[in-house]
Length: 449
Image 1 (cartoon, rainbow, N blue to C red):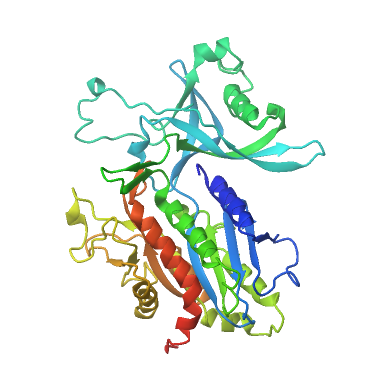
Image 2: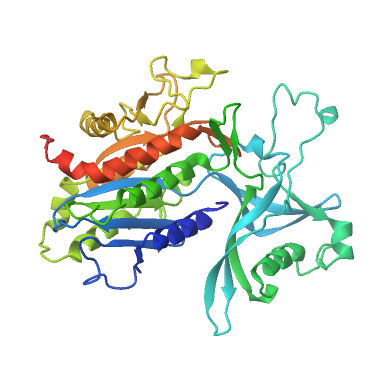
């Protein structure tokens, strides 16, 4: 999926095909949510919550949660993207997240995202667009013009990360009447708007606004001599997002899958994790709390403290990729905590609460993994290294949820092309599947308040 909007749209179609009912946040859920039911809703088209209600669920019972994020570092078009320089049409972009930006040079780039389109009734609708052709590129400067490039590749993020869209001469011979410097200075090059409109089969005048990100048009590939690796863009964190939805659906296989479950099984995929999660559809919002409260309130037998009781009975897996040990830079990892590709997901621990894992939450996950033959690794950063974080501590603190942080190991994190182990994907799916199926029964044996 080239953008969070496309990723969530795939999830929507996937869940609908697995007999999930789509809910709307603007409408009442009372009388709609039933035991053994399957449901989902989206917010902003870039976040999604999917859940299945156990046959023995009662208000106050817990929720088994897997949370991940749908966004990845990228370049996004500026509100006024139209630029020209030295005979080229160029596109102004903003940096989204902490990308490994030098990897964006010399790649076949295009654009994808959401376009707001006027309809015939005077309203507006969001349409997804993804142009498959490599219409943009950020060329490197030739080595002859910078002999120091191989010692220290430095570039200005504002001026040197500006993609080329077309040549002025070709555009003037075609359709872009603004390429030569129209005094009105429209926000975007006409040739780009026309290409987007053609893709959507609408008029340029019907395009009101858009949120477009650049993406690498090279397809994901199975790599390694033994086909054991996945080379792809946006593995952080579509890897976890895929595994979460697949694990949830797999846990529901069979007519009696939910019959004896006293919990709700829930997946929440948030947008904007790469920029701090503070948005109406990020983890630092009321999205998950609102969903949990509404599930409780929509079921028969609810009381004034059902939500609080449910939180105490719930457990969340915060799933985000982790750093695999790099064979050329192994010294960057703490010697006893070096996750490897193809050896299973890693539990992430940090004494300073950059991860939410505790001895209680790791014990629960290790028990489920051991009983089902799923290997686990552990990751701790070196004391002389800074530690990233996830949505785990944020949600755990907001809601009081027991939380464990885990993730599949990844090489080249935040590069335009990342690498993960092919077998690790199946192991994480299996872990989530068994977590959803088994946590409620296991939690009854955990004696920690």
